[in-house]
Length: 414
Image (cartoon, rainbow, N blue to C red; front, side):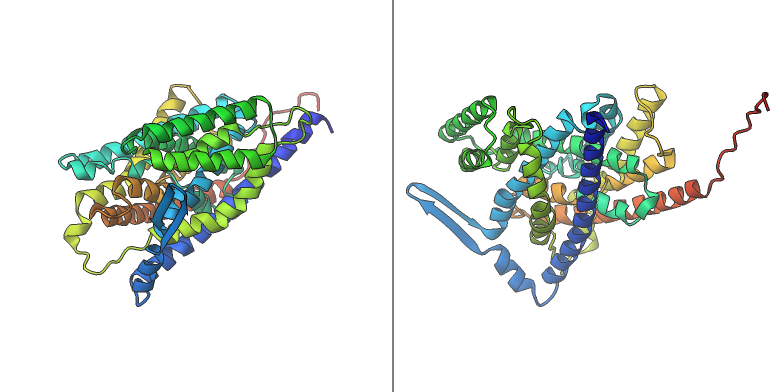
């Protein structure tokens, strides 16, 4: 077996492990969200709120970080999630599916449509309120864990090409979400804290340039970077993405050693089975007591729900269709037009990233719009997941039942 074949087999097995982990995580996320809703609407409501508002403080000299548990989860643990996202982005662009430009075109165009159309729909329903407009980016995100979790319910009927397409689109979608968070959800800037963050980035640049492969020093500098961004006004979770970009892909002394892949594999289970379910449990609990029809028809929940449910599927499918018709790209092998539509609908499951952007837009649910946004996220994500699953189940069953093509070519030499 040649070296190139070994690398391809290793990459394929990594993708399979990744997809299995993400699918299982999606199912666990569903359970965590259901548990949060039960807790928020039962006798456990007071315990649930006490848990989320539990004060935690770290004080060292002049440094004081005092936040409730909810914000430690959203600002702290989610930084680890974004760190993993950054590692995945770097690996995909250097050695993965996105290292081949031809594999970027279709999911890239789809990701653009899947961000623009939902935002336009949200603005259409909330353009008359400056407060509500803060949530315009909530429906632009896709939750890859939830999406692959629903796709896993279809078993082996779903082709690997569809899973790779969805994963690639969600990764590019994450890039857009990261840019949006950095540009539009930044508070008042502290110059001193930004200077400290800049010094951390300089140190990380030197470590990467010298191909320093030990994880410990990167983690130490990354922790200082996180504290600096937390105090700077730039959202602290971006420290995870920045740190990931400086982790070396390969050791120059031993090309078989990949510091980045080791970290990625170590973090996958922690993020998939602990951090994301905990985030879902902390953010999905909506008390439905007193919710009226008028509240459901308010601009924020309607804009978020329709942005996810209609905006995602229309934007992704329409731009992908146009791209194929203009011969800018082609449909992946094994994916039909109905399959692409079902996959586009599944991308309306925004859950994790949508909840996260919602917490930024509406001050971690301190404003009245916070619960409205969460309601819209859950409704839009549920409808998208249900429609996507039904369309894919129907289309994949029909494709599997098609009779095999018979080769009618006559062998004249017979």
